[in-house]
Image 1 (cartoon, helix red, strand yellow):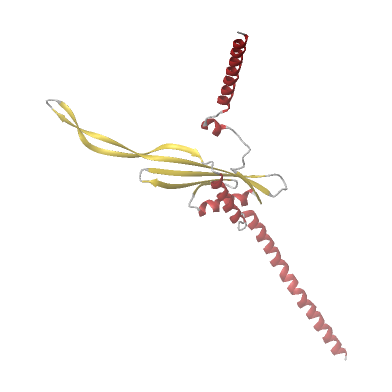
Image 2 (tube, rainbow, N blue to C red; image 1 turned 30 degrees about the horizontal axis):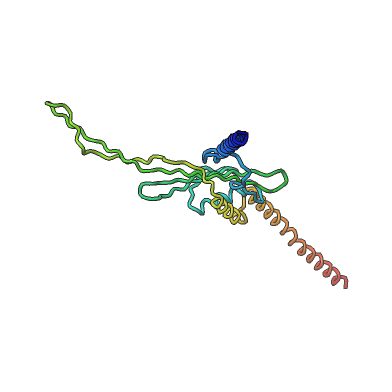
Length: 225
């Protein structure tokens, strides 16, 4: 009797422990929607580059243009581009690429680029419109023939999460960053060029003046002789 009682208590204890484990496992399991809503420490959407905000965004603009994107909004530190493509005859897709360039800190001469791409998918929807004919005896009659209206309807919208997609973009930005010259840099280079040109005539006139003085001195010596 005592043995049966102990076995029963042991069975109840194991059942309770198993139920608690199942509850904790279910609470730890997250739906795909919850996983996308969480913040993490991933650096998929960011990368730091040397240089100013203007040079980083200019390199990003050239990178998007090289891949067929149409620039819809362009500011010194904000950039937006769009690209359209067709999966098949009835599915159309668009990618909107958003770029924000932010200086890391004063005096660091480095910039962080934040990139985000949203892909929208559209599907072709057809709607048939029947024709109606009025008959005096029985009223109006709807016939099966008529016109067909086609319209593109958005069926999905998602932020592209793939790290490889953004890595390819950042690699392109790094490639174009070496050849970028911002308007401020171009103006500085222009001023330096003007200053150099102003100094060169003064330096070139100095030897001529020294030569004239030397020739005058030789002429005075010859006259004294």
